[in-house]
Length: 425
Image (cartoon, rainbow, N blue to C red):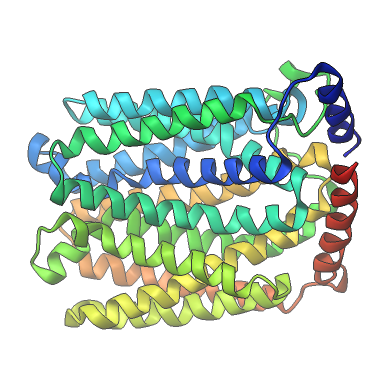
């Protein structure tokens, strides 16, 4: 945090006006929300794209899955870049890239254009997501850890809902929503120009681009224990994001775009709200509660699918969303505070590599099964069974957490007090 203190003194000498730490924090949180909203906004539009361009369900899951693979590639190559170059330059370039992505979506005229937009979107998101999360933790470890868990589901929920509303009620649905998102990204770029850098630049920028999956020793055990819950919650999110609209359309016999994005919205909104309400729990408690909620919610959802009980389906989705939000936050909180400041973006990148693999691969597998004319209800039930098994493993793993991991919240609060003292200077 010495670098942040020095930056404050330097700025006062030069007369440059920067955003306050609080304003910078909210700007960064808004970027996580907008990046994830941009990735989920096309979800309600997929049936329209299918009708316009006539591509198959398996191509739909490829469009979804290729985004996750692009995120993975960017995380592997650029995930640690902000630890050496600094947070701000990485975020400015990524936000510019997101604005370009919105233009690509708005001008796409075939499934190829859609695939290109998703690849570029994945690359810019992967390059930025670790840097945004690390920058928030640089500013405030306690609030930053919470925001890293709250902002992604809220952004996902918001994008799915907005995409459906724009499609159903506003003109030019395949253009207008992207224009609004592009304007938001440009405004965030302006804010980044006035945000102070939170860490000092380090040598070895080119070396940081070499794909490397080495974890700080202190984070290895907690990450190993967190893998089952990370995989289960993000695999569920991937299924809802890719095939959720098709599932809802079949259950309700409705082509409403708002309803098409509603399943993902309920899952993600429930996740974000649960994190806000339960953030004071310890990491171990959150993982256990998340795994239990995931098991119960997914089990209820699986039972309702063949019966077409839409009310119980959304209830199960909401309960599973609690598991998503609380489980993911518990996993992040059990890992990240053990990493040093110049290790945070790299550690977060590895966490997100696990998450996006879990989100993309199962969705593509499910689409491939559908291509063999298997009923979507049966595919969903198999998917639910796997998620429930992973949730059970995560719950067992949480019982094995050591006292050192369990003490993380105290360490976070102590670090928060130290950081607050430095910023006050």
